Amino acid sequence: MVRNILDVVDLSVEEINDLIKLACDIINDPKAYSEKCRGKKLATLFFEPSTRTRLSFEAAMYELGGSVLGFSEAQSSSASKGESVADTARVVSCYADIIAMRHPKEGAPRVAADNASIPVINAGDGGHNHPTQTLTDLLTIYREKGRLNNFTIGFCGDLKFGRTVHSLINALSRYTGIKIVLISPEELKLPSYVKKDVLMAKGIPYVQTTDLESVMPELDILYMTRVQKERFFNEEDYLRLKDSYILNMKKLENAKKDLCILHPLPRVNEISKEIDNDPRACYFKQVLNGKYIRMALMLTLLEEAAR
Ligand code: NCD
Image (cartoon, rainbow, N blue to C red; front, side, top):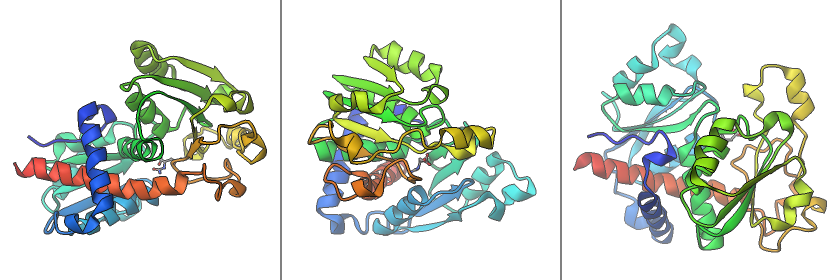
């Protein structure tokens, strides 16, 4: 049976905790893992732009001793000739051992998984899901706070189109003592399906506001996001909303001393550069954690596939 990771709930809480433990082991002794995927090939099928996600998948596979093939834009693949995602997945299964796929259409990695004979990992599908960013976020929270329960987390910015937000809320809803503060302009509020199917269904306490500063003192973690320009229907709305929140030192005046500031990146200008050297800024550490958790995930999936 081939195992795919299309949504963060494809992993149980125990499995997520095991991946975090494995990532921590890799961090402590990377040499011990440097040959674990010798001879294995990762295919990165990126139909949408990416820096961190694609390069961290690739770096992760190289550091496990494996190799990488793939494409970084739809234009350089047969998609530009009209090939379906289903056919591409079937073809790539002949060349590689595992696929990481990003696509602008929600559900495209599911179609790939249904047609591939090797594991498929969703590396972001439209405004829907981004499970490996969530694993990255969880590893970062765990390393910074020492726990994955009992904290208040604020999500700020584009909560409507931000797939990393949807995935992380889904994951956190399975841990205890989590309170969620949703901070966004009216137009970019968390979709009602996430509120209904996740927050309400699991009884997670949450509040919604448009004002970041008024909730700042309560937060243990602040998850900033970029306004997702590419998912807007018109430029005018984007221009009006893009600078809704710009985090600067002034806005942090009433924040907790041990606040942990996360951002999946890329940042446009929603976090002022003056914050980068503040010890509370964890977004560049998050980038590095992304490589280690992807090493843990690919190693685990490839070991399962070999059984
Ligand atoms: C995010 C994404 O692609 O959804 N980036 C990432 O994977 N690190 C966030 C974003 O693009 O804003």
